[in-house]
Image (cartoon, rainbow, N blue to C red):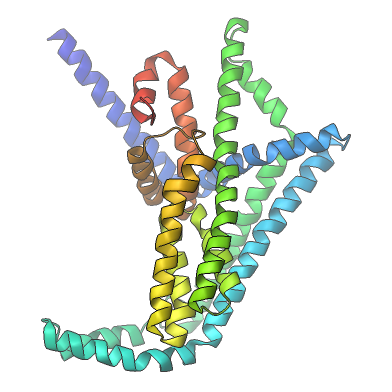
Length: 351
């Protein structure tokens, strides 16, 4: 009975600790999410700063130049999204005109062959017609809320890069700080663990960037042949969105449909876009990802899916972006802590 009670107490304490951790992550989202994103990006950018320092560039300047370069790259991506969104708005009348006959035909088919009635469809139309992009029927309050959301996003966005600058500048001090918690005999093992953590984050992110470049080419070829308007821009945005696991592919597909099928209304475009994304996903999942990313993040796909879903519930899109590298880092820690090695074995992909 004593052993059973000990197991019960251990399981209960572990469950309570897990609940407490999730609660803290949710409550402190506005603080922890930008900091975590900044840490992951810092691990990616650290080799660039190291190279600049080897070229006798002062530490402060090396960190500043690297941070500004990454800020400009991310700003360029948001600019592409804004341009593409503006194109959607400008072509909205064309989309409505093109899709109206198809919507009527689809509505008639549903009424004739399914339990859906005209009354239900009219009710859905009324709900959609009363929808406001700004989130409320009171435009003054909506504008304030919308503006507040933009300001909040920009503040967090800039805060991430402020974090990156200071972490790049003082990265060696942070490393020494961690090492001071361990004895001289343990420091070699700790240094090895920290290096593996860095390799996991860098390997995943660099591999992901290579995948994005290849997918941009694949999407450009497929969408160009399919006849999608602005296919190069759509392909680039669709490829960049794959940084968000699973959801990014869906968003990219919908974006291609908007500028392909919805604008032109041609069934061949719909087929071409669908085939392009199916082929691209097959190439990414079964050919590119195993060879480009390889074993840098040696994590069981089942736990990858769980991590992405859980992180989405806790931190939203930001959580989905950092879920896989964080899971890889956690697994490295598990494999180097004797009491947690069974969990590392469970999460690890290879047996």
